[in-house]
Length: 160
Image 1 (cartoon, rainbow, N blue to C red):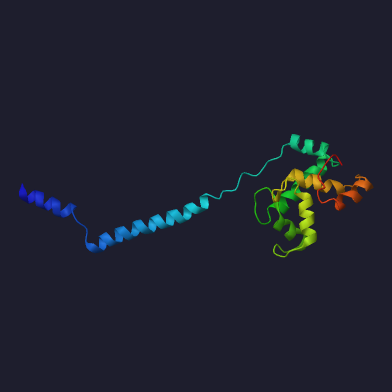
Image 2 (cartoon, rainbow, N blue to C red):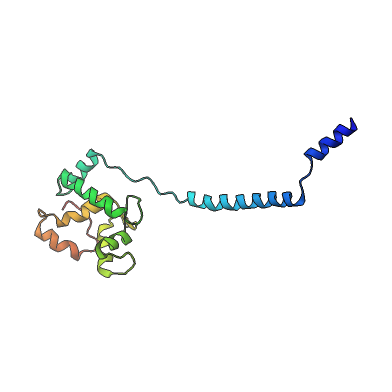
């Protein structure tokens, strides 16, 4: 009985010092890697907005654009807004990239244009803001509105 007990203790008991060191290092490395990878999960982008026909119709009814033109603007907006960050919003750098072919340079004119587009003043332009800002360039927009809008930096859509 004693011989069986001592053979069980020997077979199931201790690791060698190198095996113990390896187990400790493995645990530390796994912890570091999982914590590092976990950092990336905290910065998930919000889901991109999806626009139904009713949404496009509503935007068309508040602008001079037809529903077909609003659909074409949505396609353009999707291309522009996914050039750097694919989050369904147009950021200043993406507009700069589209107009100046570089996301890095500063441009006072472009910053003013972006400020005109950013009606909510949250640093990003959603599709409705984009459509409303481009409304002033529609061929049916009145000449008075076209003249007045650039002079007013706070040119928000107000039924133009």
